[in-house]
Image (cartoon, rainbow, N blue to C red; front, side):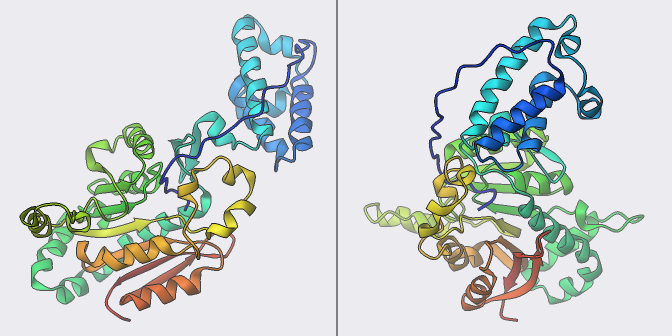
Length: 374
């Protein structure tokens, strides 16, 4: 759910309240306390943190100087930049009004940090969350372990795949053996903001990725983030539902000429080493009870996983074998209390469970699996 954006859910903001002109004799601390109280009165979680982040962003006080400047009169902060400060203050007031409607700070600022990188976000994509960093850790752990299992992988690989792992070994540096420099092929299903695949491409400098999303607006955000982090030349963005863009035979048209459908089925399929997905996993009936920051400001199709929250996993597991090889690894993020259901699905579809990882809260969050029963 975390990084997928499958559609747009319009956000509606309450009309802005009139703003009292600020008193330039007030201190930064007074402004901080006033905004904190306004947010607290609106039921916002962590009002102190949000007030601090918004002030720093719009007033231009950096993190190092914030605490030291709390007793400083606003007039002193303004100095010769009176006009710029005033514009920043008005923008701050509007941002506070938006936060009072429970719009996430990241959507207000248009920026969200993920795995040490800054990502552009808007109402067309799900907000990247710290829980999803668990998936990045899981992929990197597999990549780093590959250098120790390289010989085993080569011996086990079928003849047609053996050359792939020889290429991986060839790209490892002699001085510091690492498969992070190998030419991994990554498929991201339901990419949303692109935070998962863009992060991995930033960390795996010779990897190439394909990112799929049903929302053109979400793909535009992913493109922006790929360009921001200079990996756009290694990422292909495809519009469509799940595996349909990479498996033409899934889009066969019953009204189309049979020869064209046959051509689709015969078209060469890409083969990926790593498949990642953080699909919608909230059961439909639970959507209404979500926090307003999520329910009202994230795309609904990025949240709704069907009656039991598992529909996207079934769709992916049913078809993913067509685009992977025996040593490929699939990584899924899933919701709280869904780990037993995910394990059951993985095994029911004939995949081997390799790893289960917990997030920082100790909750099972990411599973990895591969072809074959284990």
